[in-house]
Length: 155
Image (cartoon, rainbow, N blue to C red; front, side, top):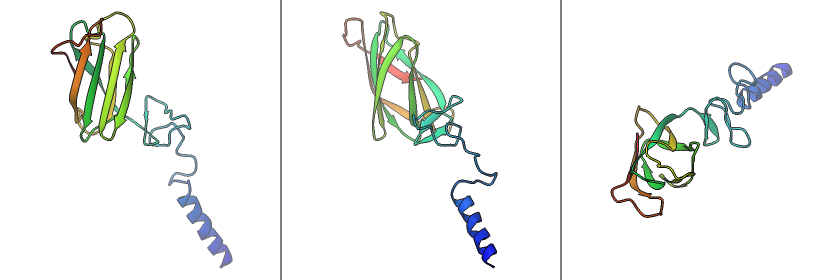
C-alpha cells in the first residue's frame, strides 16, 4: 500500500510539474508554444509575446508621401495585437506601447525616400488582415518639414 501511495504521488508530481503527455523535455525554450529564452529570443522566425514563442502574420507599412525621410504613426489595436516591429536595412526607428495603442517612429538612414520600404509589422490575430487602425500619421521631408497629405497605412 505504501508503494502505491508513493507511485501515485510521483505520477502526480511528474504530470503537474513538467512532464507532458509525451514525456519530459518536450517543450524547449525558444521553440513554438514554449517559453522564450532568458534573453527573450525565439527560434525559427517566431516572436516572444507574453513570455511565449508564437507565430505571427506580417504586413508592411505603406508610406504615401513622396520625399518622406521620416514618419510617425499611432495605431489602435482591435482584436489583433502588434507583436513586433522590424526596421529593415536602411531604416531605423523606435516603438512605444501604452495599453492597446502602439506608436512607431522611423527614419531613413540615408537621404532616400521611404516610399514603398522601411518597416514591417508582425501581428497576432485571426484572419488575413490585422484588426489594427491607424489613428494618426505624419511624415516629414529632408528638412524636417511636415508633408501635407502624407499618410502611413498597413498593406
